[in-house]
Image (tube, rainbow, N blue to C red; front, side):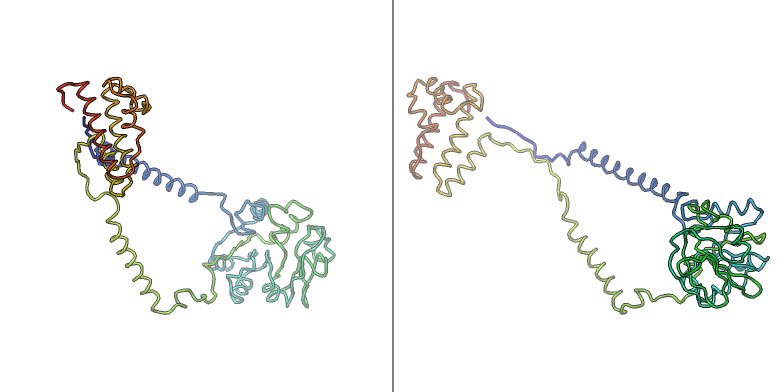
Amino acid sequence: MSQSTAARPAWASPRGRGRRAAVWTAIGIFLVLSALLGVALFGAQPWARKAPMDADSAGPDGARALVQILEQHGVQVEVVRDRQSALDALHRTAATLALPDSPYLSDSALTTLVDAAADTVVIEPRARSLRLLFHESTPEGFASRAVAPACELPTAQRAGTVSPAEVARAGVGVTACYPADGGAVLLQVPRNAATVSSLDGVSLLSNAHLAEHGNAALGIGLLGSRTTLVWYTPTIDDSDLAAAPTLGSLTPSWVSPVIVLLLVAGIAAGIWRGRRFGPLVAENLPVTVRVGETAEGRARLYARSHDAAHALDQLRYGARLRMARLLGLAPATAPDDLADAVAARLGADRAAVRGILNDTVPHGDRDLARLAADLTDLEAALHAAIRPGGSR
């Protein structure tokens, strides 16, 4: 009896190739759709975070609420995003400038903007702007409580108490309002027929704190004193500072060619090794395999290793399968039950048949050869008894 199988892998069939193509197509479509969705989400998000005290920001530290209130009071608020536009707007009309102290601007750029404005309010003062514009004033810390004006400035008197904020120690000739903890919340100084004021805008004028105490009144009084307000937030594109050395300028000249050479070598190695990936040849090879060939092959291997017991076990295993099929028994029939069925069919001694099929243990190659011959004779006799004159 023989069994035929086709040695053709599943991926080599037209159906398998179609399935693989469909899977990769679906993956590609999914990746493309994911990329498009990501672009749509991140390319049009109105809630993207803006800089603190940005005039268009509705976040807690933004200033959109103050800008809208100023516009309701008749102030034309012009929001600019670059330094040249800010200078052009200040040169067109006498306007108040709302300006943070930005690290992107040099000292000269900062003072040029202040000199071009009719009035200036520094809404995020730092040590640099306090030193340059307020006669060597210095940061002093943060007020621990709400602060009253305690000065003669009309704007501060009208606003009244304001929220706790950063304070600065005033320099010579600087008017200080809202004194607290060794400094003052509001500084003001004359400059070229204009006034320059300084206060912590995030703590007083931002959306989160504008409605507290007299914060809104103070902001309107300082920023709404003229009909036009230029609100300028510097960016890195406005920087007039000398560019810092780049990594490329600091590395030796031979580094770039070496990196390119390594990349080329890596690509070449990938192509060289990559051609080994996947099946090289797909062939259809119909093969006829005898049922007991595996058992007989293992028996030969055991025989070569002089393991007679294992070799005989493999021969017995194949013979039992064939005998069970001849007798119409299940392949999983117990060996002793199969031996009894064979003995009954042949009318042979049950103990002798059990010895050949199951029990006798060989002690060498001579015993293995004798028992293998007995096993072959027993199988031939059973075949002759069941199928007289029939082929095996």
